Length: 356
Image (cartoon, rainbow, N blue to C red; front, side):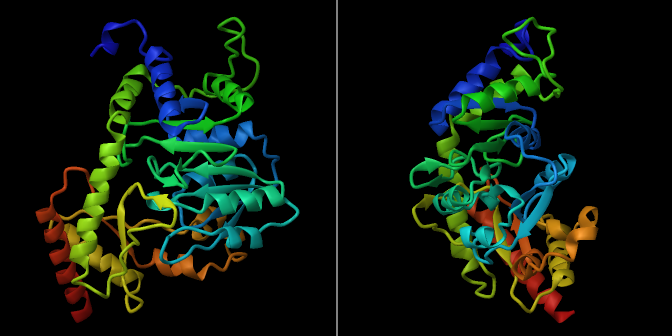
């Protein structure tokens, strides 16, 4: 309401305030607020000046945004497999995919579960590669007491409504490099250079601004991020305990070496005896009984948009996991009784699908 009573609804003081609050929380020098995590990734690719035609390594088990950005920039995606238990790729898998034409790595903390960023950054240094750290699902995740998103040359976070905190829409590019920060600030506002006259456009830019209204929400929400992380940790623990009654279900690991998980969602995996069609039947059963669920993620390497190159990638773990995962209801106000209803209904759905 205070924002609405001012004359600055866009590119005003709340944007700067949110950026400073994020820098303090993340213990990183620069933050550039934009209108989505995808926009932040677009600016990351552009400010790092990745040459068109070069290769960028990323996991196939991921949201569509990284693939879209790479294709829009004329970059060649190189997909790598994941580990079934962590849903994340590894430094070894990344290193095995490096060729002379590789320019960068997109390291994604899937579902808020932490990557081994020290190992990945060591691989990048050995091969002189740039690292974009996609922590859009991992605000609050820590690795060796450092926040996810702060290890790479550039990091990105997102504040879409399903994230740990939300600004409605929104994202941020974070970095320790002043040149990248300055370039990103220019690009997000039509290519205007703040050191020149307001209408002086120094390069081709975008309209990636986020309003002061959104940023006011971000400032408020960020103040409670630690309580959000703790609440979601307790909820994951409740799920873990109750799902022990269904030993066939593969539960996510509750711990990660030298790391703290910030749970974006709670994702289970059905056993090997289930296929994609049966997984979808389980989801239909849950939805019919008023329980929402998600089927994260459809592998990027099998998307129609990359059909000509899909045969170049054999990613058996990604395909196996993608056919069997279900994201169960997971939100801050969820109660233990509601978790029990979900687990009991899940047990009914498994029995029903087997009978058919």
